[in-house]
Image 1 (cartoon, rainbow, N blue to C red):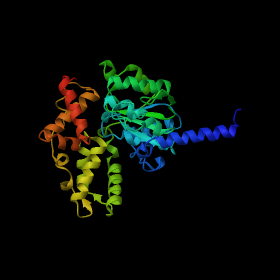
Image 2 (cartoon, rainbow, N blue to C red):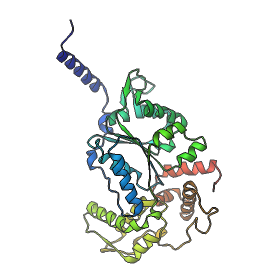
Image 3 (cartoon, helix red, strand yellow):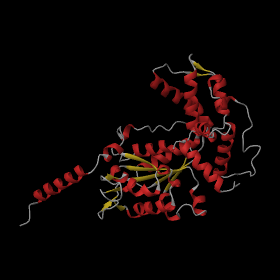
Image 4 (spheres, rainbow, N blue to C red):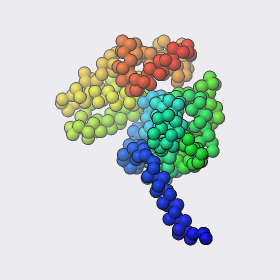
Amino acid sequence: MRGTHGERLRTEGGNNRERRAAEPSDRRSLAPAVPPASLPCEIIGASDAIRRTQEAIALVASSDVTVLLTGETGTGKNLVADAIHARSSRSLRPCIRVDCSAICTALFESELFGHVRGAFTGAVAARVGRFEVAADGTVFLDEIGELSLEAQGRLLRIIEERTYERVGDNRTLRVEARVIAATSRDLRREVARGRFRPELFYRLNVFPIHLPPLRERKADIPDLVQHFLASSARHTGRKVLRIDERALERLQSHHWPGNVRELQNALEHAVVLTKAALIEPAALPERITRRRREPLVAERSSPNPSLEVIERAYIMWVLQAEGGNKTRAAEVLGIDPSTLYRKLSRYEEQPAAV
């Protein structure tokens, strides 16, 4: 005899509880430690470029379409992703960041989709994947341009069909999370070179938002400086420092290859060295106070070099300025040393373009 509807619900609920009990604590460890609504999502500045970015965030936040964020390293793609999530109907759900550059192809499916116990050698316990942890929140695929072609193919299905299976499991699960992707690469160029799947690019490029480099929005530097100094004061318990006009002039004349992240690092450096209430030029990193000819102004081989050419030239320039020290160069550029090593390796494999 069939059970009642209530009995079926109780049975299903019990089964669900058993499945949850059998799953590891990955779901808790991968979820944000703070409510998504309180994630940092301040987009600082009043320039036309930033106003356009803010308008795009407001437009797309209310929808569920896939967003592709592009721009150089350090331009704040993660902040824009947080802002879109925080202003969406999913703001009370998790926003799970996946650093695609840090996941090897062999573990890609396990990281994103999860696996069952015994799925492969070393799988001593079940693992919940990032998409399942996100549930009906947001999955932020950062540096998606670093994925291998094989991993791109695996990701394509989940974006196209909105379904997946855990590794070693034949149950099909449905994706409820929204996808936001980001890259510092020119994906159209990568597609043309056969390094990025065109079908995945078109699936991701539904609503593109390009973040301008800091050198194209220098009018925002005073606001950014005030923001970072106020933030530093909150963290250190000191009074908010002021900045000398000469120091501000040096900041505004710098070309900022590391963009906003480099500016933040420079100000943190200055705060440590400043014991009085005013930041003077001497407290700024030497690379900013040194007077030197900027690259790609007098030496560029093309009047309109591509973004990739500019990034490559600046990386090599900073590396040379730091005497070949890759750790210091990565700090100047505001990127992880592993990212710098990966870029330099790629430069060795292909000749410089114009």
